[in-house]
Image 1: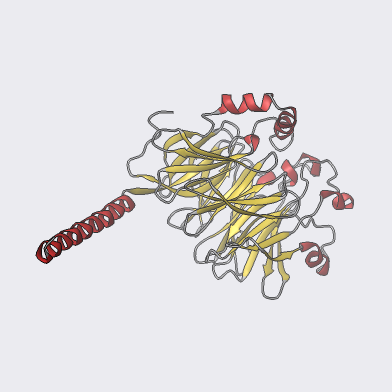
Image 2: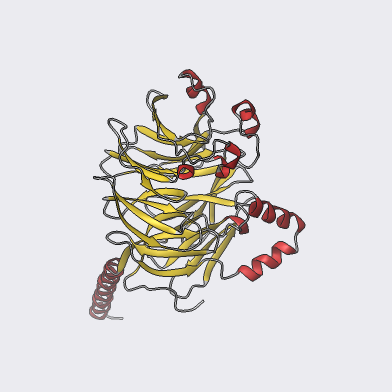
Length: 415
């Protein structure tokens, strides 16, 4: 081959490569531009997820069936006595007589799929948002899947395998297991730090027994926070709030840390514990609880702890982006309220039916709570503490997460 021809072919190849690279970049940019920010609402009892606007009136855009394989899963459960026992135990305990079909959900980075943890089916699945079909399924260790967390870059998802006492981390696109780590009893909430370096897990122990009096607290199991390296999954530290609570005279408080939220600089953790109508403030550097906020009790709420759902009194806490306001779901007291972070003074008590979760709207202006007792999602203005919108969703909404879907999406076209 002549030198001239070789140079010509090299130049042509280089030009094609440059064109391909430019086209790929343009496609990537177009794909990114074609995504729409939304919120996923997991309707635990009917096995669906509603997709709603992330701001404004929070109108419902569409619905996804997250159990399209229900018949196959039920056949497997009915054929395995151990799986059947656990399935029924979930229905008759944490499920309050219902199956738990969706606990948590996130979108993949490209917005094409929804990744869902399904407690009663003990798995995590990825569902194509266009077709409604399952992309992959990852059974978790043990017999129940619970809360998840997604890494800041959106590539990994951590799921609590609650009956196995561990957290498993999956590739969000392929479902491949990347690693796992052990926790205390019944791992629950997971949080990635903002830099993606660490995962915090809160183990809540046994929440389904009737031994709810403080004298029986020791029967609830090993409850502590586990902090691990998010790359190696090696334990960095554990934090047992028992000693920290005892140090400030709260010996009758449960040390089961429930939902929690970091301050923007991640120097402070605000968290709820079982049976308590309020929350606590924990200084990470000082390693101590610095403030305790008790919120009002609803006089209509039974004082009998055994009537409170899964040992919750209040379950759901979030913070606005500037870190000036907290929002609390007063689950058993049937209200939600915005709390000033500096003074810890609560705002209006916004009536809500068994609010089960609290998060933040896409624009950061509103607190979003799921009213599991009324099958709706309600937005509360962080600035005023007043309700601004509500939208009806499916049966027993729990987790609400910011997500992305293709622009113009209105629901799967098949499935």
